[in-house]
Image 1 (tube, helix red, strand yellow):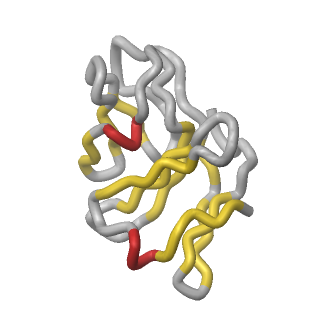
Image 2 (cartoon, helix red, strand yellow; image 1 turned 60 degrees about the vertical axis):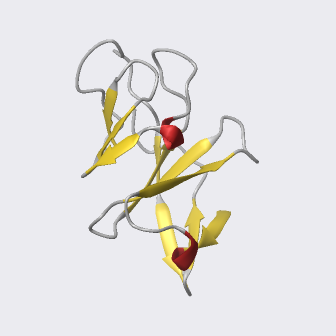
Length: 105
């Protein structure tokens, strides 16, 4: 498990990039308070998804507007055609942790 940050340090609607692993992981907290972790790099072109726009369970890449479902990693349309990997997120004692294993793609 990778320790990301404290829950209080990641406000709803925001993301944090974890670059201590390869590939980097983006961890999102939705407005509903759910946590999702995905590969941080867009599969269309090299851009950080943590810098993208979050709406519900969808993140939009800041470079060419590819959108990905954070629950499945699937793109919703061009220009991205390949999914991103998703990772399990565990919150224990107010700390967000990510299991660095692939669970979908």
